[in-house]
Amino acid sequence: MDLALFDFDGTLTHDEAFSRFIKASMTPARILKGYLSLGPMILGYKMGRVKGTVLRQRIVSLALQGRKRDDLNDLGKAFARDVIPRLLRSDAMQQLAWHKNQGDLVVVVSASLEFYLAPWCQAHKLELICSRLDSDDGLLNGRYIDGDCTGSEKSRRILDSYDLKRFRKVYAYGDTYEDFEMLKLADIKFYRGKQLDDDFIA
Image 1 (cartoon, one colour):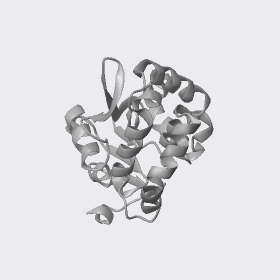
Image 2 (cartoon, helix red, strand yellow; image 1 turned 45 degrees about the vertical axis):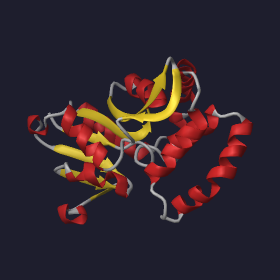
Image 3 (cartoon, helix red, strand yellow; image 1 turned 30 degrees about the horizontal axis):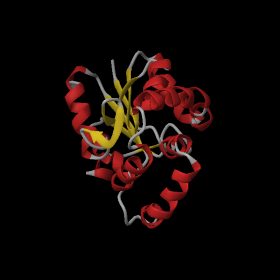
């Protein structure tokens, strides 16, 4: 059996599920407040000057702090059912299906959120490592559990969850520098759909 590790946003999808889910979960007033307060940071992210993990943490705090976990779970189930199918890349899903048909263990490893990834992965019989949000008495407190699942945190969680020596080969699929640490774990690595040589991210 081989192990196949897939990033989600930008790798399995052609658009960011994270951003779409956040917008779907916010009132118009919160959306306006978010653009006004986070506009410079969002611009900095697009220009490569602000790290994605910093921006996501600020967005999560602004958009979801104080929300009921149960409400976000319900919204996530609907989002997984109704929105995610429209975001999926057909070529990437074909590659994922190939691994499943080979009997490989397929794991989604993502900085995206559990609210929609958990039901989507469950429906597709995939394992999941992702960002999870903390709560107090059922209300989200705007903080992550164990931090944002990106960069070195991806590789740490993978190694904590799986003994890579169990598998004949490890495949990894990503699309940004945030996936490089995960790609380094793999025998066969793909970046934006193209197979990489080992020295690409050495």
